[in-house]
Image 1 (cartoon, rainbow, N blue to C red):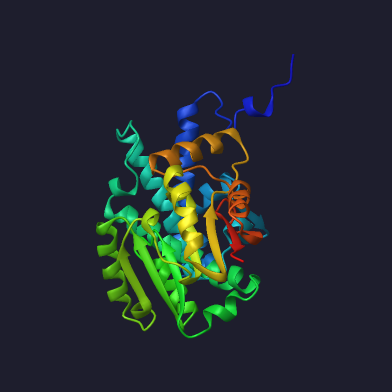
Image 2: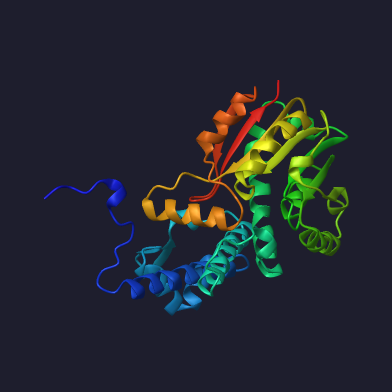
Length: 320
């Protein structure tokens, strides 16, 4: 008997009852999301003890281990603080809501984020605050000269596809001298963003400017110290058209930071990532392809920053 190639090996052991296995996996995901959400405001040990049936599901799927009487959550989901727990929960909840929408009868390709309801947009947007904090705390300090730039009076950051402006607000809070310009092609989501900023009511929120604009129409020259580009949310044609404009918008020596999808390690996740990207009007660029693209445009000092397990890989490069 021949040994099957890696691409032909099933990514999930479906046993004799595939539906039951897939349904159980869905409930396990629900248990993880609810646990992370609760852990945003309570100690994790209390959260796990308070709902033993839900915790038993996490233990059965291998996300919880026991050390005597101590329950230990999988290290991939041991986040440093409450806001990060909430961001992780909201990102996974957003993905689950989209899967439910697909199951409910949307058999064609969706028109992208414009077809999502406000709750999905809010959840996905609030999750992006975690990426903003990662950029501020991990990426900016590692990029030569960028921290000093953003600490200067009049520094500017461009946030592409700002959504509800959660990432823009996180950056404004982290860099109190910077103006953050958030652009989005969806007027509806900008209305949600205006409400989010008004509800925040902080000095940082006052330094976030929102614009109704398409990334392919960016026409500023040497205007920004940092550009944030969440590449997976753009169709490939739009991404190809936008990149030269965004590079032109960088000041000399400034940095672009690009969110990319991590490479899927197995056939199931590769297939799901492709379906998800197309349904949302996005693309399947991974970190390696993005790095090569940026260097082809003449950017230098390229580097990559993994985020949470299974999360985006951030690619940064500098304009000479």
